[in-house]
Image (tube, rainbow, N blue to C red; front, side):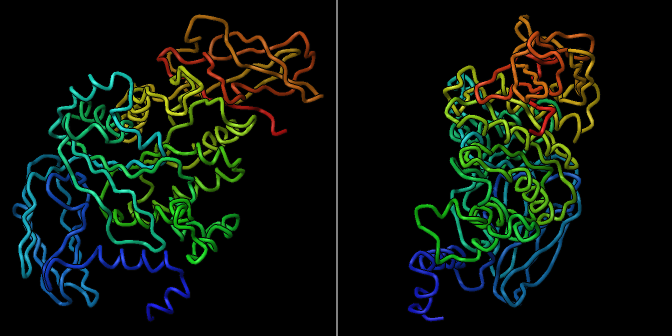
Length: 477
């Protein structure tokens, strides 16, 4: 296709991106072996998992990969791509990996341990320099066996085989701008498991969920067919908003990581979808989870996510529907959710600075469900069922831990009930064993209950381990 015809078909933005993509993967010299950015010095490889190493070379060029006593050989295919697979290894290091063809690359200070990928929008992207007690946290971030990889922000209209970024050793100098949620999560794992931890952060503030979805995931869901069609029409993309185009961030910031063995994913996103009053967030998050799992081909790896914190600038009624969608995502196998209604301290701040508790709560899910640590209470109370007894509603919960309690020792807050008129009124609530009993003198025959069903709700119900209860409703009115 000529330059003129390309511009005619895809617009000048399409031409610009095509040229950028081509330049990204030009080999340093004809025939030289080249590696993707995710494979480099200081990286962490996933323990107990077959390890894929790949790159580019001249078509037909023989490539040998050596790691200790392990050696694998192959030849680049007609497109210049090559891949080898090394046997699973136990945690440890440092190791050196040598890749040789017409040139030789030596990767140093490579560890084997636990690898996690984190993605989403600004609350995932927020650096350690933005959290509470940031100065002290940064000064204490001397963990040579925690490694960080920050993916460069780059949207693209077609899947790219590489991402921007490099592995660095965690230190006060490197942690400042790295995802705080990822860092505090990884720090918990590192301390508890006593293993090297590799953290890959690929996030972009203010983004919808749609650009993080792969095309195959959009095409697999009838209700997302319109998004799939948009993803296939690059001529309609505005250069300023390309990062919001369906599949654009998956193409540019996730696809180049596919194949790099990892343990699981952390996800913190949804604020932008609240603002658009998204009625299909459950469908989209399910498609994202299933789409990423299918792309990696590692089975149903853990997918742990954050339920959004309250914020007073959302429109009335929109945030609870996203909360509900996030709660329902727990029905997807091997998922976990950290509730954050209690951490903001200020409903006027969409970026709660307490990222320490967010990371720790995600780590509790991982330690209990992924790493099999017994005796860990990893979730706050989650709605289970209700029973109507006269003018009272008795609510049962999963994950009560050591028992239900009010975090501040005050009467329970943010419960409301309604009768046949469907008008929800504030309700009195008390704890009876592992249940909460709610009632209102104004509702003689209650039919439904809602908890924390408001964009500014910071309720006090939690378990004795201090983990807050998730907002819920028993009606579908």
